[in-house]
Image (cartoon, rainbow, N blue to C red; front, side, top):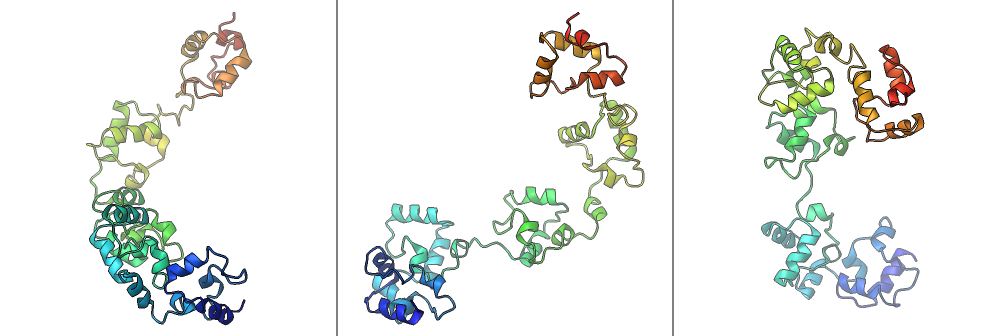
Length: 315
């Protein structure tokens, strides 16, 4: 039905407020060709709001009729009582027997409604607002930002993933967002141990892989160890093989596995009947990480392999 004709029909119903419109929708008084969501259907065909639709001259008349607070007064009430969501509002309303603010906010305040975050004052910062806020805290990496937004200092208006939230809305990279010019600058504020001191730690603690390096770093937060040594030690950096040394898994990719004799000792205790049974076991999470899933391939290259019967203890 055309907008003007539909509006004329609805106005003849003599509705006093928007709630009565939603109630009449539940009856058979509304013809099938009048939409239940006229604001969407007639958006570009003359729609001026619910007050115009039902024939109430001013939306304020609805609030007088129902004795509800105005939209702005209701928003202020939520802020004063630290109510931040619809579930919180419904709980508060029931517990305190609030009558001058409706339960179904979006219906009564449809003229001004811009969504739950707006009503409860939870809208996120714009890109520029987030930049101005976050650059007060001297945060120099995306990882540190993720930690910061979970802290008490952070604002709930900051997005958890700004690179997604502000995509096509100003985002041009972490450097611009956090306010540092170069990656070097981002890491320059910390006094990390020297390259040679790091190498010494590697030897003393038997570190042979990147995983072990990061594990050691997390377990020793009292030592200023870089998570990305390739960035901090650019002038001395010659790759992970050079950094971890000849004892690393980069120099010996099979170092992470037990020797054949030690692996056999562990496998014999499990009493596998045949190769197929071992292979089925090897494909599960029950296999120790220091025993290869393909022992033939590993121990053939280390020149220790003597056959499957020897490995499974069948001779």
